[in-house]
Image (tube, rainbow, N blue to C red; front, side):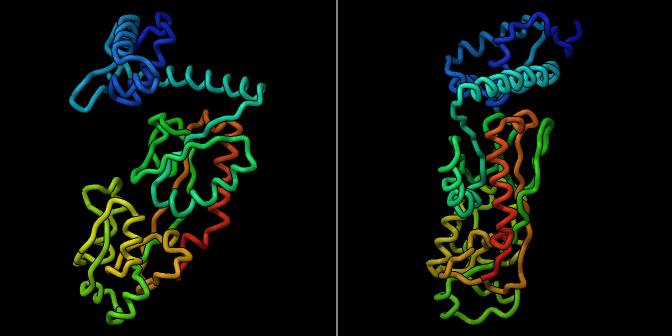
Length: 304
């Protein structure tokens, strides 16, 4: 038997859930917590699975467990088994008319300043429960941790359905009080004379959000934060200038845009797996988020 061609007929199919969990979470303790068993059980079931196929499925380093070539070959079959069971469960759930739970992974800014005020109102008329995972990072469909993912830029990987959710722009903002008590900013070159509020470079989770040097390479930062919310509050306080997405600044009467002609463009994308997209409630949730953004395009480009 080839070391990278596992004998699928010899597998105990129940062991595949442990295989998928360890692949997704990378550590025995994390996979065990997700499944609800001990890390010893995970290790034993992976060992038994490897004996069944006659080859190693994982290798380990200080970053955790990673798939070998044989493990990569087994993964699509394991995920197909998982998706088949999920679809069967969906049919059974619909027949019993039970509520489904949709896990949405979303960046902190889009969640707090757009989705969080709209999604609860929509859910009042739905038989759907939502777990909104709002982080200062991207969550990926391929991790298996979420059903819908909203990211800055598209995702990469197989078995993904994705669509551009919105183009959005960012600009330089300041509080009205700050602008009333400081010299008028007439050109980009004037920005270097003002204190800036921004992000912590090494904490930014994607290069697409490293935009400070695009706006002002010589800016002097007096306050940095890992979240767009705290940056926004610091700008509103009058501490200095800051870069915000227009959907964050939308309808905020305390701040104004500096140099409206100066802006940056980025993209928000929505994604799910091809199999999960067959779920009725997930499709309803996907459509609500997408259609809302299409209706609110002006919010993502609005100038105060």
